[in-house]
Every structure is written in structure tokens, then in C-alpha cells.
Image (cartoon, rainbow over all chains, first blue to last red; front, side, top):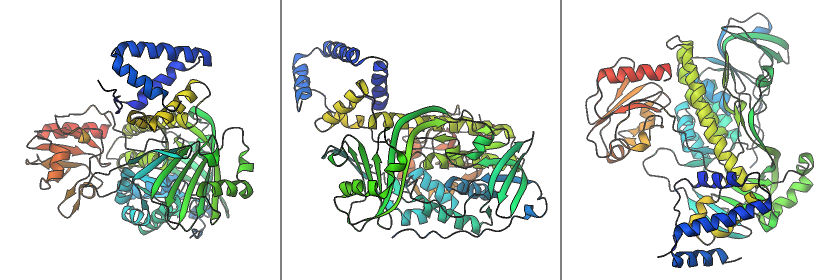
Length: 63
Length: 514
């Protein structure tokens, strides 16, 4: 299955604001830890290894 | 070509020699919003008196980006076509990160609207056109009349005014404060804003430059010519370009305004030094508003009521939205055809509109000027991904462009196209001999499409031939519909089949502000 790279969130601005709000008040180390947990949660939700492989590759590009 | 500022003539007010009869409406401030307010009231048969502490139009471009809805309002006031003809119509925006274009957008305006999506036009031109229109309508404009105090009684307000010939007082049924972000009237009433003050400053400059820049909006995140900050370039008429540069909080605004600081920065943006600096200003990002826009006999409209960070064109456009919502109601109150309780609906609708603008502006500001930590991390991640994946592009936020809000009305609705639902501005469409927005005018209209309308007192019937565009925007797959449209062109209610009683009830509710 191909990784969805087209916009797929109905209200992007609302989601982005919620994402930042979830981090508010955390230290940098706590934020990194939150992000790590979030990646694991979302990866488990996706499940399909071929999709996750493509996501890992896209995230690594240009790093 | 730099703008030639011509002072308006000062005339000694009658009130300096003898007390004036009580005025219906006094407007404080002859900026675009105060002038639009006066013209709007005049179109409803109410002559206001406008006071301004100065005697020229705004210095510098200031509000430059006028939205489609604002152009429709300006058109109703009589200066829309002039503004579009003079303005620069644009629809493409380009976003750069460092020195690479990450993506561009095309507003792709839909066909079948009289007005374009946006035009860029310096505020001074809009004010000039509005002043000429106000004079045509016989509106009393009093230059160099500075309000120094406001006193309220139960059913009136009295302003004391300082002029070059001394002081005088005016009593009025209503005072409308259109005196801008630093509103002296707001201060005189002891009112203050609630909301966020961001620790961010931008420098804005107008430059005159011969060149062939496209009519586009260019926005840079962290360009090499202005390391770590943001920059925006916009084209205006007469070879004037507007440049906005993020300064950061730890800078001294007075220092940054000096030409020896500004000119080298602009050289880096445009890549040469063949330009003339026309105007420079520094502003602080704020997203704040008054809790209420109605304070007994004093009404707040425009920046005096709410201020937003400028990216997204929500200052001037938001102010015209206020004028739109207040004019017909206040005129009816003055003429005693509506109760003053209906002004509560102005407050409710425009605080709602202001909150939408504040929310959008706060989000844009956070994206442009992220706090250290997670905000910065995600902002940079979005910009990184935007060059590689489509999904990240709508996350890039350099200002969400102003659209009119949809008021949350609890009005009769039907299974008809969403774009024309109650609370939304009635979408434009071509009709015989013109445009729907022109035919809607300034009164309550019952738009009957494909069916005969009931006869209701107090509404004007409009029955244009049903064209494909009207069908698409107002009917969808239904054979006929009835739309009650307010004087501000907001849809008040709609039915597939509506009776006389339905329309009468909706009309009463709209007047009562329900």
C-alpha cells in the first residue's frame, strides 16, 4: 500500500494547534519523549510495515 | 510614483460659536472604517458627522490587501470599481524556505463573481476615494477636530472636541469609535483589550522601484538575506512595493526604523539598490479585542474594537465586516424602526467574527515566530517536509487569507447548497444586466428562484431568471427555493417552499437579532 502523502486531515490548522497545545508547558526533553511516544502510537495504529517503511524513508530524507 | 498628500480643508465648526442641536450619530475617526461607516449610514438615510484629529489620508500603505467581500462592501458604498481598477489583482502566492521555493498556491478564483479574490491597494487610496464619496453624499467631515473627552448619559453621549480655534462640545444619540488600534475613545471609557500580546516585531516599508516583479505574494521563512527571520514582498499600484521583515523581540524599534538600517536590509531582499524608501513603520504582534463592542451609547468598530497580527489581511477587512453588520441596524434604531436591543446582535456577530480572525492570526503568528522547543521543532519539520510531500503544504502558515465568517444563526434552513446557508454572505452570481450583489443593495430582499414569492411587507422581491450559476450556488438539485437576505447580504433564512408566515417570522427574528 502506498503511503498517503496528499493532505488527509480535514482541519489542518485545528490539528496543528492541538499538537502544539499538547506540548505546552513541557521541557525540551519531555517534548522529545512525547514525540517518541506519539510516533510509536501512530505506527502501531498504521500497522502495515510497507507503509511504515515509506514513512521512515520520507522522514529521513534530507536529515 | 510616491503618493501626493493633499490636506483637506479645515473649517471652524458651528459648535464653536453656538451650541449645536443634538446629533444623531457622531463618528470619531476618518480612516477607512469611519468613512465607510458614515457612507453606509448615509445609504440608509442617516447623516453622521465625522471627526478626525488630522487632515490628510493615512501616511504609508498600512492596510493593503482588500478581500473579495470587502470589495463587495466598497462597491455598495460606491468606490468598489475604482478600487479594483486602481489596485493590483493577485492570486498566486509563493512560499520560500531559506532560498528555495517550497510551494506556491493559486487562489483560483471561481468565475461568476463581480469582484476578484483580492486586490492590493494602499490604504491612502481607499481613504481618498471614500472621502470623495462622502463629500458627494454631503457628509459632514470635520478635520482637525480631536476628541478629548466622552461623557455618557442614559440615552446620549457628549464629546468634547479640540480644534485650532478652541474647544466645543457635541451631544449625540450615538458615538461610534473608529479611532484605530490606539483608540483614545477606548481609553476615555477606561476600557482595555483582552488577549495575547506576542513578543514579536515586524518592520514594514514601502519602496518605490521600477521593475518587473510579478503580481504575487512572496513569503520567505529564514531567507539567507534575513537569517532566521521571515519576510514578505507584495506589489502595490504605482510601482510601490510593500516589504515586511520580522525583527525579533530584542530589537530597538526606533533604531530599526532608521534609513541606514532599513536600506541595506531591503537591498538584500530585492538584490539591488535602485529603489527609493517611501515609508517605514514598526509594529508589535497583538491578537486582542474588547470584551464587548457596545458600551451603552458608544459603539466600537474596526481596530478600536479588535487588533490582529497583520498577516492574513484581517485588520481592514475585519473592520469593514463590522461596518456591514452595524450600519443597517443602527440606521433602523436611529429612525425608530427597530429597537436598540438589536445592537446586541452586532456585538454578538462581530465578537464572533473577531474571534475567528484572532484565532487565525494567533496560529499564523505562532508558525512565523515559534517559541523555542516543540513549536520550533514542528515548524521546521513542516517546512522541511513541505518541499517533499503535499500533505505538509497546507500546514505551512504564513497567514490564512481573510474570508467572511459564517454567523451561527438559528434560522430556518433547508437541504440547499452549503455556500449559501443562513449566516453566510449570499454568494455573488451574474444576473440579467449585472450582478446579484448589486441587485441585493441595502434592504431586506426575498430572492425567489424558480417559484413565485409570497407577498411580505418590508421586503423587496427579487426574481432573477435561474441561470446555471444561480442554480449551482442557490438551488443544487432542488427545483426552487426562497432566500431571505439581510441588508448586509447575509442569508437570514431559506426554504425550498416558504409561506408568507415563514418569511414574516424570519424577518422579525432577523430584526430582533435572533
